[in-house]
Length: 566
Picture 1: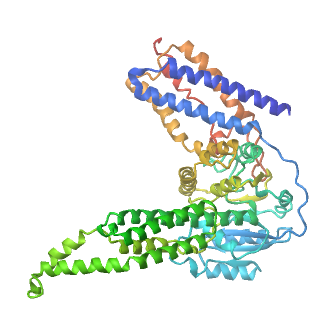
Picture 2: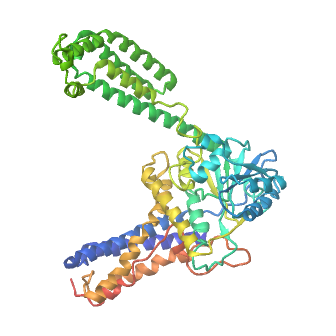
Picture 3: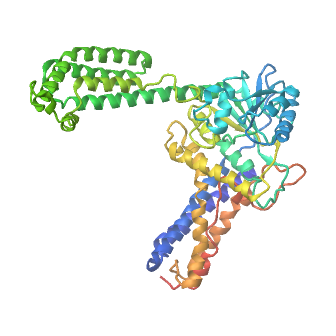
């Protein structure tokens, strides 16, 4: 408690000094003669203040959980090992370790590469093997999310331990995590991802002791610890709850789109000359009223199948009522064609191209409009035929399935847990190319979730939960600040352009206290799990985590120390 109190005092002090510094920078120290670099620099410093504020919020409620209760003896578990093209020896090493997990379970290798040799190796070891069926051919596969979603339809365990092919579980992983699920609202238990083939000081930054430690613990304090794709146990009921609701929303969206399109077609048909006749006008009014009532029924949450069936019936009845009028209009068209061709005595004088051109300019007849309405309604796919399976529990909106899935679970009221104990030994990328590909995928997935399901707009989550997700997404914008921090002193040294207009005393009086306080929350934070046989580093690993409280650049002082007074 005393350490938490000290940490909170540091957070408050950091925010006070940071707001004082950044407000002064915006109001009193900008060099407007060089606004293009001055504004860019203060914007980067503002980014850093927001970043460290979000980090401070995480640390405010960093939660070290006590040991969970014993798991229910009758709990059923499926261990799912997702793989695509990893070496078979690597996959089987993980699978054999998973087979030895002490809590009763069933181990599955989910092979998205459908390799016969892996199937044979799994069978020889007594491990279940699963690949995708023919229903996935020529349909979106959704990468790992699709692989796991396919497995969810083929397995029955109450809980799922999801592992990447290079994350070797320890025998006690289920014994130490399943107990949290005695709380019926817990949907997810995430454990650290630590890599045994690189040191804590890995120059590629694979180890993330700050993220898999105080940051996840801080998010956990706000019930916002999220799924990281592997080394996590999930409740099947929660995932299926998510998948079924997602299915319902997709179908509702399909119905609403079809009704909107149908309404637009009917409005266009009202402009046709034939729509002025009483019978046709009445039919179009009937269809418009049917569409309006269908929309109202959907808002009342009435069964979609019944709503669309009744709508089809009313459209069919309206179409039958104007067939006679449409046939009459067609007779008028034929009569006009006859006149264009010179009448019955000289039909071969017909100019085909001119006739087609004239008929093509006609507006859609009411009967044809109702056929278009029928076509729009036929696009409603209750079975979601464009997908391999109608229910997709894991989110498929990005190249990474984890964050979006846990965000949706939190939005439905489920809880998550972060269990800070090393229970699986992973393998990190050992070359720059693989590392960059991995980081790019993480960044792409995070930004896709941000753009498609911005956490700040997810009203079903609490405000702290939204901010905890936003903090991770916000950290991926740190490249802008880094570029500006490097560019500012270079611009000064080469061109003599000062982004700051103040004297050195005023600058350092505000900057140095904030810089020191800014490092304190990160430096004083506890560490996460370390690789086997290694102690945690005492160096601050802030640059390796999902929230990077970067300080304002010390290089700014280079410009400020030679600047003129305001």
